[in-house]
Image (cartoon, rainbow over all chains, first blue to last red; front, top):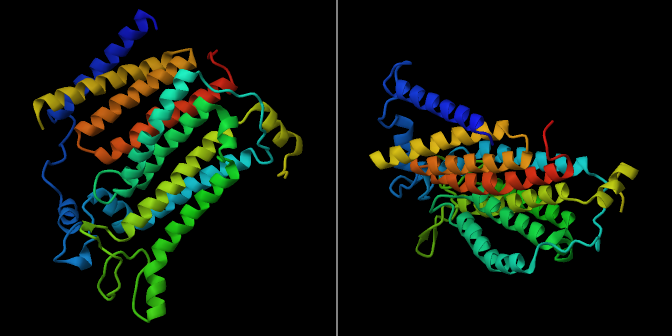
Length: 270
Length: 83
C-alpha cells in the first residue's frame, strides 16, 4: 500500500461524502418521504394481531413474517436457487473420492484448544438465531450461516482428515441438505394436505386461519408465540443452509489427490 | 436519528469506500481479501445503525466468515499475486 493509493482512496471517499451532501440537500431531485408508507404500516399492524388472525401471522418479527409467510413463495425459490448452485459445485467435482490419511494435521495446539472453547458458543448462537427467528431478528438463513462458519473453522483448524473422520462427509451433508428441503416442502403444503384429508378448504403456504379456511398452524407454544409455519421453516432452512454451505466449502477445499480422481474418470466412481 | 449515529454511519461509509479502492488496487490478493473484509465490517456497522439487524446477522457470517474463507482457498489453489 503506497501513499499515492491511500491519497486517491481518501479523495474518492471525500467525493462520495460531497455527493451525499448534495443529495441530502435535494440537489439531484426530490427525496423519498420520511413518513411510513401504507404497505409498511399495514405490515406493522397485521404481523402480530390476535384480534384479526385472518390477516396476521402471529409472529413478533416482521421481517421473518414477510419473508416466510406473506412472501413465502419468493423465499422458497430463493432456497431452490441456493440448492441448484450447490448442486452445480458438486457436479463440477463429480467423481472425486474422499481420501483419509493424507497427512493433514491442522493448526497448532493453541489454536485447536481455543477453537474447542469457541465451538459450543458459535453453535448455540447460531441455533438460537434460527430457532428464535420468529421472535427476534434473524432466521433460518442467518442461523445456518453462523453454524456454517463454525464448520469452516472446524475444517481449517482441525484439517479435512479430521472432518471426514468425524463423519462430515459430503454424502451425509447432501442428505441433510435434502432432508431440510423436503421439510420446507412438507411444511408449505402441510395444511393443504390436512385440508384435503379433512375435506376443508386450505391454501399452499397457509400459516394461520385465512378467509375461507379455518385450519391453522399452532400459534402458541406454552406461553410463547410460535408463528406456526415460521418456526418450522426457520429450523429446516437452517439445516439446509448449514449443510449446503459446508458441503460447498469442503468440495472447494479438496486436496489434489482427491480431485485427480475426478479428472481421471470424469464420472462418478464408488 | 441521533447525530452520533449519523456521524458513525458516515465514518463507516467513508472507511468502506477507502477499503474498496485499496482492495481493487492491491496486487497481493490476500491483502485484497483482507481489505474486502474491512469493507464488509464497515457495511455491517452501517446496517446496524440504519436499524436492519436481520441484514447484519446474515452479513457478518457470510461476508466476514465464508466469503474470505472461500476466496483464500481459491488463492491457495491458484496464484497469490495479480500480474
